[in-house]
Length: 456
Image 1 (cartoon, rainbow, N blue to C red):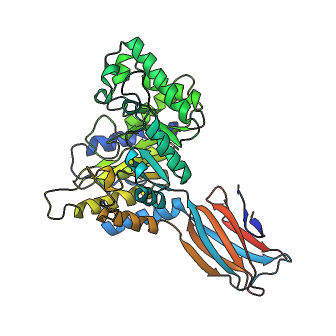
Image 2: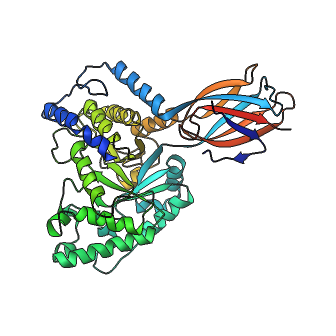
Image 3: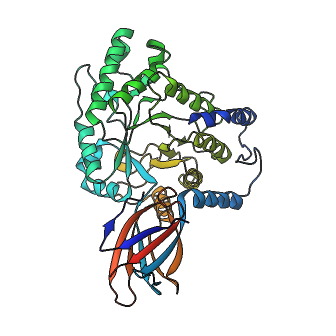
């Protein structure tokens, strides 16, 4: 058995270390979709059973099982001296530095002139989507007059605080969100203007964004396909890929997990469209991702459909981001946020139990950005019930600080969430301490064994 051996010195940093499959499962989903369509409540579907009832306790237990399997690693540590003698009673302090999972939040230009809001945002989130500031209608309201002042400043703030940003969005296939001057263009002029837009925004931020939404909502809408070509989406993905080849390019769509009755964007159609884009000449090596807007209503969430959808999408082997997650409140209730919080926790727990989901962007955070649907804070940046829930889950889904004492063989075991860690080891004889940093996941430490060797 191969064991990772780390020689402990004063604080060192070590770097340790497609669609085809999913397509084969579309027939199963087609059957599920056809059976469930039109029903208010759908029976459960998982890897083994298409329809099966579960209690809430069983449902939560299954989620915890999947979280432990997909997001945590059981590590076995052994601490020895250089002569291979076990360090009995060695004290170890384990601190999680970063997580492999990103909590994110929507951001607007209003953050630029509010220091309290900046501090709040930077203290909680490692990822962001700009609401409107990178969209074409925002940066070029008048043809030929581009203005990137706001997104430049917002990205600067994000960079300074270690926040990764998605490029939302280069183009939008909904005619409702096209500038008047764009709608008036002939097909030839539209193609010219759209190419100019792609070149302008992608070259400006090349290499600085974690991903691009290239053609937003191109399952529900077809503005560019109708005016240019049925392959318009694939053509623009190709153009972005050639400019910024190392950045992940996303489809971004609504109702893929939210509503079983939406015939435009169920997971099987999502994957077919994604494969069409990948199959377009020149797109073979393109890195792609799955963006799910995740706007849920004030009614009970069909978690059975969510689970089946995320299970199918996960089989594509691509990163999944929930990019605009919110849940509506019911104003007719005496406490309109009560069910909102319950439904939000349900969707957060179910989504987190799928390891392919790499990040969740909450839409929106502080009330300064407007709370049309959901907010984490009030105007004083004090938590709403939604904010309390998200803080609680953030805490639950991080390892935190762990203190352990090695047994007589210098050994101990611990289960941690995947991410980067700093481990400090204290020699029980000399009280000298040394530390090491390393990454924990199934790739970096495939056998889950770590040998810490104290030198000196």
